[in-house]
Length: 152
Length: 152
Image 1 (cartoon, rainbow over the protein chains, first blue to last red):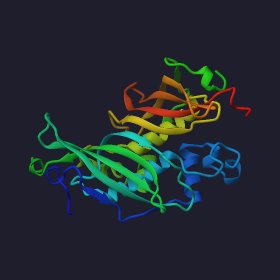
Image 2: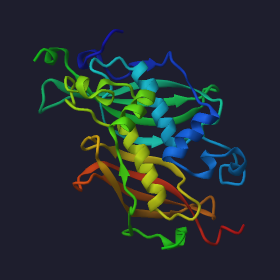
Image 3: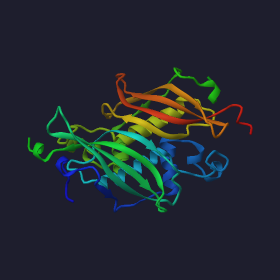
């Protein structure tokens, strides 16, 4: 599929990432050092005596890596413009050495009543590790443009 | 308030950040370059010809900066351990030079039926800019430990 406009999208369509995001221990610690400086994200040894018992990535690091994958996976005509996210969950941790991929399914396509050039697409997004286990799930609300509205 | 256990938390309690997060143009571009490389997050001039018409921070940058503030604001006994987030919204953009602060309100406290040592706290979190305008809202589901469960 080339660039997708609102008219091209329908519930049930699936997009899966070609790209993979590799998560290294250094990247986990660097992200956490800046944004989420808690012991289970910063140091393997100290992490062992915490609730998680091992070094794991911040959930917000996982969302950021997922965004990297979304951009490469969903061919929306004007890019990924999100108004919000529902039901964001982290069912299991992301560990150093994990390789992430993305599975997206369109679950709703809605034209805007106020702006004829726009619509909203709801997309269920599942971030999977190399064992095909979900590490993150969410429903993203994305702006989508109508082909007919683009020239105006 | 010192460290807060499940028994100390109740709906209606409010926590506000002393800390502020300052968002610079360089940080916006650096975060976007790694995780959300779209033109409205990368370059002031190019951003002018996009939907947003200006350089703005990635929504995932705002969540990450908010996490920084959460850690400094919510005194949960064993840190901030989130199982998920509902109703995440970005009602207006974060711009270079913005200064963010955080307002948290406990909306629900629930003991775990399975694990007597734990419970869940639902917290409505609003990230505000220097004009007291919300730039992000969400409801976070956080793990909270019972005081009585800690020694076991």
